[in-house]
Every structure is written in structure tokens, then in C-alpha cells.
Image (cartoon, rainbow, N blue to C red; front, side):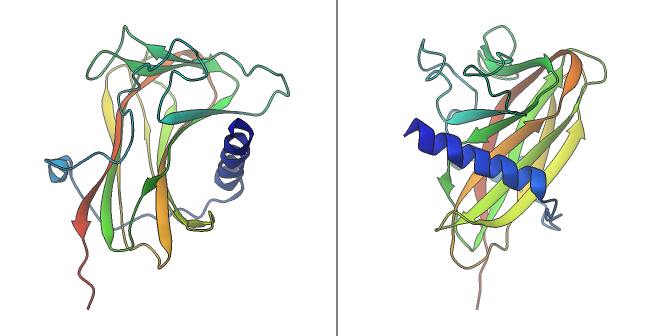
Length: 205
């Protein structure tokens, strides 16, 4: 099972690195549109669910690139109980020459849904790295349907990154939220309160 998950994450990583066709949606949804709705993302606050490091980050996987070919990946992503936008924990990524992609478990989406995706991020430095927030939607066979992206250079205070999505293709089945942190040379980055909500239903004649 872990091997299947590993190869799935590698394929997602390849899709992100080899293609640049992201949709810049004209849709605009807002934080208030999520009121009373269920967050489709599991463990949005990056809470620890186990003392085993391989099992603690329920609902998320961390992909570190480039692959060092080592049996153990660089230890640069941690659940942090000392820094949070909301609640008691966040996910901390320390400076390294590696790109880090934080990938949610898949969740169901539908063709006629409109989606609001967001996370909060901050840096230990006045000028931190540029964070990419992505929503990828997939067809039943696992092929990518559409890709949506927002980006923001973060600072040493919590800030929101958000993207709106919709007008999905026939046959769309599920989605994943991906938060991408590029290599950076100093300090740490924290991610918290990630989520995706179906905030609209398009009426199609």
C-alpha cells in the first residue's frame, strides 16, 4: 500500500514539474462562502495522530524533491506545536535545497461544483519564499482533469493564499489540494488551516 501511494505521489510530482498549463479562473469565491459547509480536506490544522513519524500526519503526504536516493528523506517537515494560525499545531518546513509538496488525501468533487481553496502561511523571515497553492482535479482513471493555482510570497506574519475553481469536465471524480514550497536558504515556513469547500452549484440547462 505504501509503495502504491509513493508512486502516486511521484506521478503527481512529475505532473506538476513537467506541465505549466494551470487555469487562471475568472471565478471568485470568498471565505464567507464557506460558512456552515464541510471542509473536504482531512486534518486541515496538521494535528498529530500518532507518535510514529510515518503515520502522524493524517490526511497528508509530503513529497520532497529532488529524490536523494537515500532510504530516509531529508528531515525538513515537522508538526509544530509552538506556532499556529489557529488551534495548537501547524506544519513547519525548514530551509533546504529541496522543493516540498504537501499533498492532501483525495476528496470527491463534482462537475457542477464551485470550489474555494485556501491555506495560511508565514515565514520566520521578513521576505520568505513564494508559496504555490494548487487544486488538481482528476478523472476516474486517475488522469488529471484541470489544474488551478494561486501564488504568494510570504512574510513573517500569517497571510492567506486562496484560489477559486469550477467548470470541471465531464467524468471528473476527485481532487487534491497541493501546497508547494520551493527551495529556500534561511529560516522556516509554517502552513496551517488548509481547506477546500464546495461553495456553489452551477445550474446547467
